[in-house]
Length: 344
Image (cartoon, rainbow, N blue to C red; front, side, top):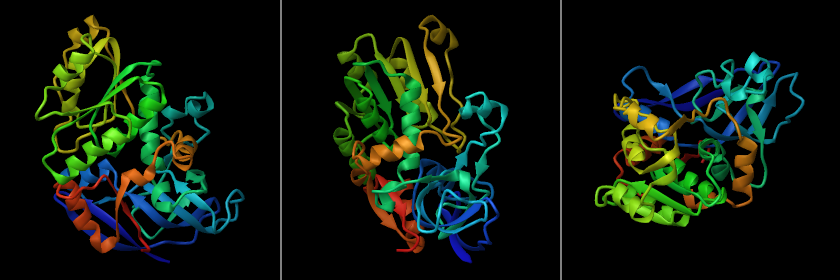
C-alpha cells in the first residue's frame, strides 16, 4: 500500500513523499488517517529546524483498515485516535504506577501523522465515537493542555494567567475555568496580524475574563491592577522567553507550569534563582510523552465541554500544505487550528 506524507524543515521547506505501508505485524494495525492537526511543534520544525526533514503531524484521528493476528480489541472500521508516544506498561516506572516517566515507549517509528495511511502498534490506539474526525484529532493537543492544567494544581477560585493564545493556550484557558479558576487572563502579543487577531478574539469565548495585548499593554501592570500580589498560577504555552513575564506576575508561593518550546536557539533564558527561592516559586515543566489523559480529553470534546468547532478554522489537503503552514508561520491568515484531511 502506498501512502503520501508531509515532511518539513526550515524555512517552510515542505516535501510530499510517497512511502510503502507494509502488512501489519502480529501486534500492529494499519490505519487510514482521516484528519491530522497542525501542532506548534510542526510550526517550529518548518520555521526553525535546519537539519534533515522531519515527519510532520501527530494529532491523528483515523480508521482501522487492517489488523495483525494478535489484535483482538480492534476491528476494521473502528474509529481511533493514534497516540504519538504510548507508555510500554512493563518497565519499572510503569509497573510502579509512574507511567509519565516511561522511556520505553511505543512510537510512530518516523512516520508522519500527516499521511494517508500508517502502520502502528495496537497499544497506540484510543477508540472514540460521536465526533467528526476533524474534531476528534484535537484529542492529542487537548490532552497536552489538560496535563498542563492538572500539573499546575489550580486552587478552587484561583487566579490564572495563560501566556500564549495559540490552540494549547486557548484550551488551557477553557480547562482552567472548568477546574474552578475564578479569573483567567490570556496574554498575547498583539492584534496586528490576522492570526493573532483571531486567536485573541477566541480567547474571550474560551473562558478568558481579561485578554491582554502585550505589545500595547504592560501585562504585569494589568494583572497586578486586579491582583496586586500576583496570581496563583501561570500557564506558559508561548516560547521560553515569555517565562520572564511569568516570574513578574506570579504570587509568592505560586506555581508556573510550562510547555513552551523553541527550536531556533531561543530556548535558553536568564533565571534568577535567588528570586525563585526567596519567593518560593515552583516551576513545573510538562512534557506530554507518553500520551496520558487521551480518554478524558476525547470525552471533553465529545460532550462539548471544549468546543472543537470554535478551534478548527481551516482544513487543507497535501497540495495546500505549504500555503497553510506559511499562513501560520507568517500569521497572515486567521488560522486557529488547521487540520489536514488526507482523503479530502
